[in-house]
Image 1 (cartoon, helix red, strand yellow):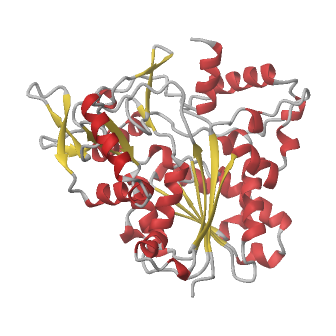
Image 2 (cartoon, one colour):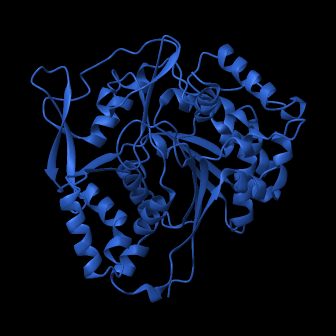
Image 3 (cartoon, one colour):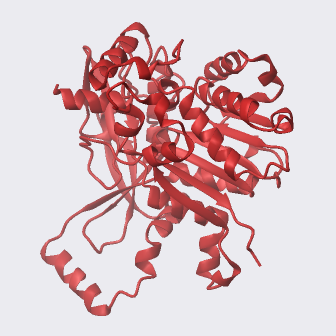
Amino acid sequence: MKKLEMLARTLLFLHTSKGKALFSTHIVPDKPILVRDFIHSALYHPTHGYFSQRPASVGVLHKTISFNNLQGRKAYMKYLDNIYKQNDIAWFTPVELFKPWYAHGIAESIMRTANLSVPLKIYEIGGGSGTCAKGILDYIMLNAPTRVYNNMTYISVEISPSLAEIQRQTVGEVRTHLSKFRVECRDAADRSGWGDVDQQPCWVIMLEVLDNLPHDLIYSENQVSPWMEVWVGKKHDRETHSELFKPLQDSLITRCVEIMDWEKDHSNQSGSVSMARSIWSKVFPKPRRCWLPTGCLRLLEVLHGVLPKMSLIASDFSYLPDVRIPGERAPLVSTKKDGSSLDYGSYLDAKGDADIFFPTDFWLLERIDHYCSGQLKMHKDNSSKQGKKRRTITLDTSSFMEEFGLPTKTRTKDGYNPLLDDFKNTKFYLSVPTHNIK
């Protein structure tokens, strides 16, 4: 494998476990299921799912990397290679590799924006090893007024019981943090786990959460044919899977398509352009496949419903290299066999032995965020004079960290900075509520 590809794989943290996962055909029941249910089962099935079969999923560095003592890129990559060999884990997240500076940057962005006259409340979805929580609590303890730290609450919503316990141990390294921190072991996308609507301002943090959320797939025969839902079913041999196409009927898929096509449906496209497209599609028909972040839509619908005054910080990969799966916003489906990475050409090949990893379309994420807050509904009723409900911005990771972080802390001797230089395909999304609704 080429050095450049190895670097890209390292930076994407797509390191799978050393052991071989059992290849399973049990993730699909006898009746066809939607693609999002196939992906959820392939990743999260308690017995046959990819994450269930890995001995470890999130690595914890025992000490902070001293970037200032490293000569440059070559020394950093060698150091990174060594710590992966020394730790029998799946990957190190950015917040772990760049601790505590990554979490400190997020904490600073909250401090600059939050209304500190009310108790600070932070939710983290999928808190991993607890490194982000500890870093944020450390920063606020040292840099905020004492009353802010004393009165704050930090809640981790974690679906994994083992990770929940690791988070308690990590945060508990500072005893005073324990009275502010708690873990709720549940699925954040399940509305029933949230209880009553909370009208108080709060923050929600999601780091590398969107990439593994279930997605749906839609298909069209050509450029103008209507979209159809894609379902997955077993073939007659019961050992392989195939796709089935049905007219759009699932409400979650339908809502996602409406959000995706909003600009196209409301643009002033002339009749002649539409006719030209129709003729072109008949002469040069081209099938279309499009991946929909329906898992993200479901999660944001729940969050906006129960936390209407939340501010959101999300970070993830904006694109992925070497994707072989067809379709817009297609995932990387990767496993490791005999010590080498192997990418599949079809998501149907992932049956518990491979990670399914999606890029985040940050433009679409913004549209979904506005839709779930009610802003797009207002526009649909031609009542946009009521004002915007959200103020949003998308920043490259380097821009975010230069604004809120301490870039000098992750800089090597020759000026190379892996946090700023190697994460060109990652972004931060910030969304806060406005108060100009009349």
